[in-house]
Amino acid sequence: MISFDNFIMEDSSPIYLQILLHIKRGVIAGSVKDGDELPSRRMLSALLGVNPNTVQKSYKMLEDEGLIVSHSGAKSNMALTQEKIKKIRQEVLHADAENAVRTLKQMGVTKEEAFALISEYWD
Amino acid sequence: MISFDNFIMEDSSPIYLQILLHIKRGVIAGSVKDGDELPSRRMLSALLGVNPNTVQKSYKMLEDEGLIVSHSGAKSNMALTQEKIKKIRQEVLHADAENAVRTLKQMGVTKEEAFALISEYWD
DNA sequence: AAAAGTGTATTAGTTGACTAATACGGTTTA
DNA sequence: TAAACCGTATTAGTCAACTAATACACTTTT
Figure: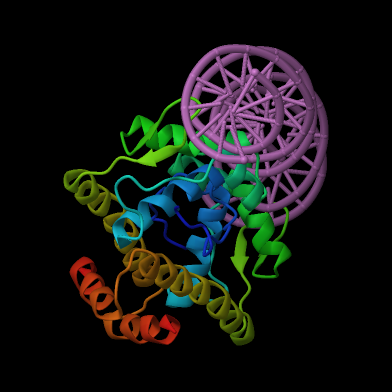
């Protein structure tokens, strides 16, 4: 079962995108694998304190991307291949790294200072 | 005059927050200094292709924080002190670094891999 | 077989972000 | 002084995000 233990709500970004990204980052990390069972819409919405429709929107988008398979009445499961995983990594990790570098550079941080910052906040 | 040349619109985050953060990051970088003139609401809104009210909202929030002084009919200027700058750094750089580290760790990236990624995307 | 849980769908409503148009009075500039 | 620009404000409206309540048919479990 996919875990949402370390899920942190940031505001300013739509919740359904945060849920979607949480799962994709889990795929990149390897903690979310092919065939893994997803928490039900109702269960996850209760856990996160959001509306079931919000969770449904995340799941629906993942299904449209072919990353999730769900049969009416049954559980929903991850449907991953190596190519899909590679694509997700290219998409999410690329965007995250680029974004981090861009904001750091925008604040006048040098590459060395960036390393120091990463180290500082890593633990 | 504060520059918005390297301003990039990310979706998923409100534009007025992006504008506000762009200025705060400029303050941290030192490219935005005390007394610096801000582009007028109308000018910036035309430049970014957004509504004047959206820019006004960003400026209003900055003014409420005491970072901007604006007199009706006249230009708006930055009002910075060393303490304010230090506070902004603590606030924005802290959040950005923490956020970057959190998402990277969530993807199973090690500290060494993070350094490699930062290096890769730095140029 | 019955109960519980599941995915899916619909309808209605609220809130916030953003657009659009316009107005007023002050300041700057030519 | 007159034109141009400025900050400020108001009103109305759209659209997306999210909530709320409910319903239906299917699957799993007991």
